[in-house]
Image (tube, rainbow, N blue to C red; front, side, top):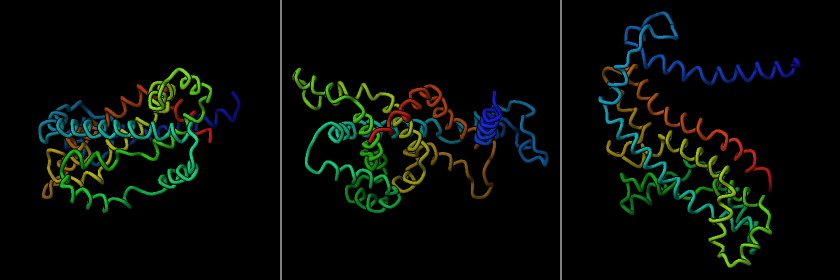
Length: 272
């Protein structure tokens, strides 16, 4: 092994350690007692496994309800973010119509607009429709994804046009071609996009704080805030246990789908 490869491997291991250390520290605190947490000495490994923190995390607040809310919101958003971008991306990639380049330019421009810029108009619109403090308020603003349109458009553009011409000769409609031929061939990109979408909205705290007030609709990040006490402060052990419980599904999902995720990213953005 050359010196360059050894240096590259060392840098990767160092980067992995920097990224992993906060998660390891979170797990360590979630298994420590309060005296261990607030001791002057810094120890990474707990003296014993204090599983009571996890029991308190599940019983002190409605953490299972928050996890269920997160699943409903994330998969509701993902459903619509697949339903709308796939046919739009197919049209931009495989159909010829006037203004196609301009429309794709608008999609690229949409990638540059932060969601926070549109938060106030969205809130006012949802308030007019009386949808504030509902699941719809958490799902509807994200139903259309310009990033999804861009990613699927790049994937569909890489597919041979002859494949779609043959499907048209066989009598398939454009909608059927998009869903029955183009979409299955873009499953790696769909997996990558699904991970991006679910992780982003699972971890989102900004919009749930604005769009909902009821604890029954709290998503996992907002639910963690209920471990904070104005007088006593945060109970670190149960707080870290709740945080580990919230993070665990995302880590497991990524480990399961990591091969498709990497392949989707590698193939999705290469062709213009």
